[in-house]
Length: 408
Image (tube, rainbow, N blue to C red; front, side, top):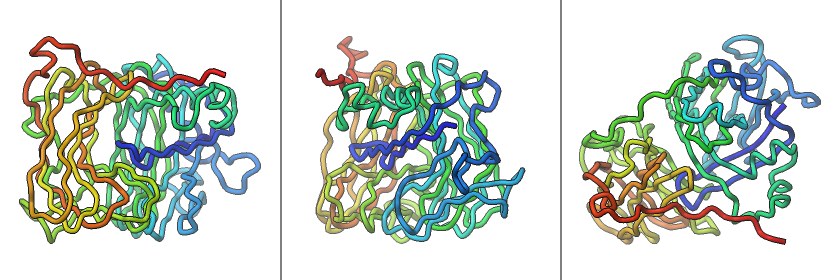
């Protein structure tokens, strides 16, 4: 049965960290309308393992404050459910159960609907379910050849810093109820052409426990792409609800924190408060943001604005917009960087959305490691009109070339 680990700790920046391990090959995907997941109710045991369910994998943090389990004490249906419990956020990590599938043209230009039943206990922070789509040459070969990713990378003549992996789909649902009975959760994601791997996850970012059971991944006809005519394309732009509309992109640096702050605000009653950390040896891009379906934004010019406040920030804060296509990410323009101590200040960046855009990431970045505090509030992502390359009939922006294998 397939077991493959893929972990993205910082989904939208240079802090993208990939951890992979393979022990078997995934079965071909069943026809559309059927559950694509192996062992969706965790009833089958992994041969030779005392408790692990077949077909599933866990986040390999190697931290002693995290516990993964499979037992009969709490189950939504059948005999088994799985759980993950975490008692410390000193190192911020997304602890989860996951499953990866190799896919092909049979799912291209369709939607997949990922559903799972969850139960939270003493949750402080956020639990989540997540569907991801990739074009990952090395990962697919590793599964098909039944070898670890490092072996596949060597056979294909790639190096660690030059892995050809393209994000093509992303849909996450965060939820933060402290105590719940079994609740059905669902996300729906479009699968673009060129996608060859899907990953689904359910887990916790915070402390407490989440139990998981009866997962399903079903292919269906695609829903229309969201319209691009809203005044503000972002959800919960003032952090007034609970912050669960926002992604956190952050490395596992000790004592780094991001949370809604109801004591400081530019407008309304809340803002997003970031406590930076200087306990890291590698400079990475971090921040909070939202990932949007970009299909109806191609050929548009968009603007991201936000209000930012900082106290003793030794580092930089700045807005940024990412655009992902099937050929890879298309770089955007450089933006003004803020640092030091200052009261609320409006910052903005604009860019053209390239043809064939799949995903647009609207992000409020900062560099890490750093020291000091940052607050963001009242964020807007709006369409200004046609892209400059459309109006002026210029060549459109292009994706960053994907790495080629080394010759030997």
